[in-house]
Image (tube, rainbow, N blue to C red; front, top):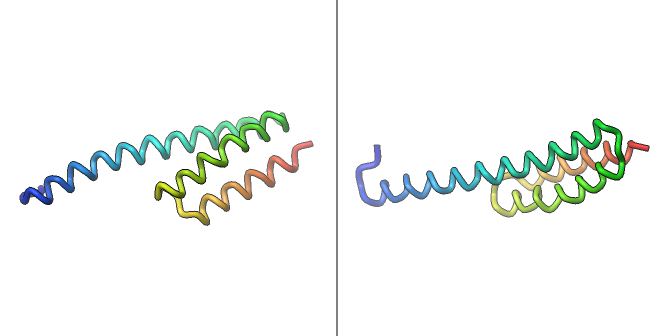
Amino acid sequence: MANSPQAKKRARQNEKRYAVNKARRSRIRTYLRKVEEAIASGDKEAATAALRAAQPELMRGVTKGIYHKNTAARKMSRLAARVKVLA
């Protein structure tokens, strides 16, 4: 357990950061799940709209340090390819 005041403050800050990051990660996953569901239903318009909504959320996750930029780019690329195949 943290003993020094500095370590105690760090522990408090880590708890706050953890909560914020967890909420943000959950929000991003929700957007990605909506794209997956639209792809599964076969609705190209809905999938395209969901992908357009998910893209800025995913990139915001990169700027906030939740995802690595290449991870986000890979996810976007794969989803875009799957949406493109829908006809």
